[in-house]
Amino acid sequence: MNLKKNKYKNKNKIDEAYVKAESKKVSEKDIDETLSRQQQLLNKLKHKKWDHIKTEVLQLIEMLKAFKNKTYTKTPWKSISAITFTLLYIINPLDLAPDFIPFIGYLDDISVLTFCLNLVKSDINDFKTWKEHQETSIDV
Image (cartoon, rainbow, N blue to C red; front, side, top):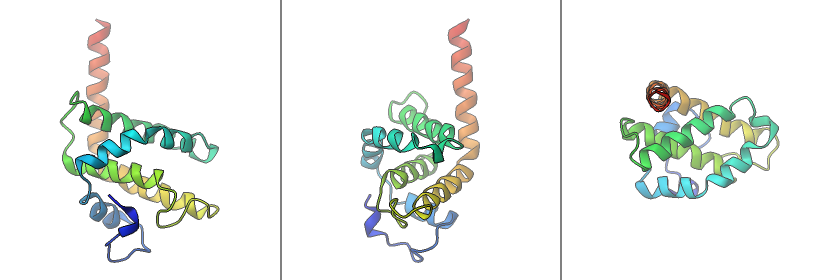
């Protein structure tokens, strides 16, 4: 998925429709790319400005890994594709608002992440419940 070749009608507006439209372009290869670039994402999360939302990003990475490894496959493709798009968007330094632009570069990443979290909220909750059950089963 090439974020530079964005065919979304309103390229300057980041909203839920933008995340949905771009998520439809995600493929299995994009999941592989996202996971292979995980360290870039983790490095970006080290910056203090990500502290308030780091847990949510780590949860999305975990969900993507579980889907890829087939340890948890109940997350629908539309959610997996939204997660993949969002993580790739955050990793990409040259998205709609490049990261080198103070504040704005971070703000667009957070906006995309927020819309994604709203789109996949119930799937995140289902995953957390499943994960808690798995951990409880192991402890017994």
